[in-house]
Image (cartoon, rainbow, N blue to C red):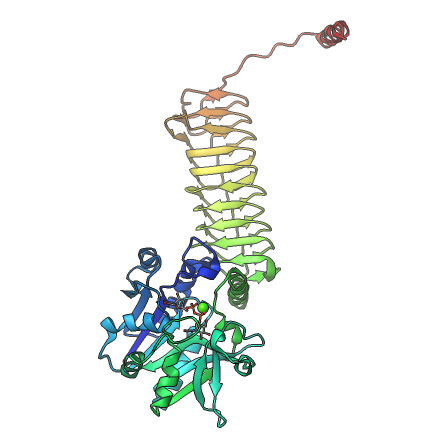
Length: 464
Ligand code: UD1
Ligand code: CA
């Protein structure tokens, strides 16, 4: 049996009150239409068609070549939206799954069950429904006395009696492709919203004596359709719970799942512990046996094994085995730490590599630098990488020792095994094994402390 999918993503989403088109609002970091397409892809259809309208180019940009697109130039309703796909799917024989781009929690398992039920019964339409305690806002499933599905009635068109119905339309359906497009020809916009409702296809097929059935979703949480920001936060919470549960079942310890924010594409190895207040975003990958957090944010970052990251922010960074970061470190794009590296408190690293066993323990800025193995960078030492126009490179070779509060004015090279004395401002490269000192020689004046205090006191007395 040939399978097709139509994802509806042309609406603006007025109720979101947003510049961003509704289906692009992220849920756990992925635009909601991306979640929907992920689920659809897992049931393996021959054709995946996305109907775009508002923000068409941006939506297409997000989905790329994962789907075929049709334009719905004017948003005249969900029925009208599906009809636009006729240009691509006309004459196809088989099952078409129609799904709304604003229902990101629907799972591939549920879609597969829906498909199977539909195909096994050779039905004309099978609706994915859910029983909700609060059905407000959704289309209601109206059944005949014998329990068979009669029609779907939108919230705004419901009688008071129909409003009491708790079984709702999730906006996902399977149709016989040919019958779907035939029935759409008969849909009118004679309703409260003056829209062409896809939901009217159900009543039309039923009136033709076709087999229409419903599959009630085992988990009503999957059915949530996002129309406003209240529902968006609800979906975010449900998706977060789902993601966290998956990691926990894979062997990750999450101390407080309600306060741990892991985006959909993040990977985490077993026996890693995630402490509260931690956000893991984008394409972040974390290996086994790490401790991450509390209160850390990692974006598009690679973390190897046995790494400890405390109260820190990492963006497009990578951290090798057995290294530690923080507390209160900031690794910016291009920070690359080797193995057994230590980056301590109030250290910022940008576009810089630190090779194995090197340490920057406190209060440093290392930017545009290449640091070798086993280098010790003392407290408060910094690379001076920017003159207001140009970024320049600092190279520090293996086994070098950089004293506290050293300024390295780039471009500069500190040779292998070199020793830079604390408080130096280094403007010339230092050779291998050389010692560099660049500061005033110290003068001690015996007993002068009392004299200087007497002078200061006299000045104060004169002025008062
Ligand atoms: C729709 C269903 C409702 C169901 C609910 C489930 C209809 C008439 N109603 O209502 O029965 O309970 O979903 O969440 O279908 N869209 C277009 N073009 C349009 C209009 C909408 O592409 O002209 C897209 C939207 O981008 C959205 C989806 O279709 O992704 C659903 O539209 P929306 O306006 O949110 O429908 P609901 O009122 O929620
Ligand atoms: Ca909706």
